[in-house]
Amino acid sequence: TEYVARLEQICKPGSDATERAVHGVRADVRAERLAVAAGKFARGERIFKNTVRSISAVPRPASDRTTLKRWFAALGKEELYLGQMVKVLRANNVAGFERVSAQFIHEGNRANNAVVSFGFNYCDFKPTRFQ
Image (cartoon, rainbow, N blue to C red; front, side):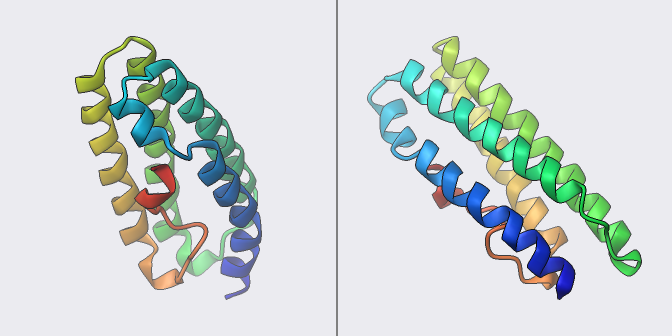
């Protein structure tokens, strides 16, 4: 519980900032304002990377290291997919964006499933934050 509380303190500001940074991004994609959407995802990606870097520095409980290793691996893939979404949007590739977006959501769900027993709120992936 102490570990979860420390991570939640770190994740909350990043989660809130990400939500603000990418607000309206789906509408931007639908309206084909792809450069605007790419900029929003780029800001979200920077915030996400900084948050993951910060929570990675917190010492992990020995009993949960294997589970947390899987979670951090999934978070790394989410980071990768965020970067790919920026690239495909900048290339005006809506179909590519949809494909990578689906992979991003899938990986977020995998990350959540790895740590479901921890009861995270702000450190959990919520696709609604990316709308």
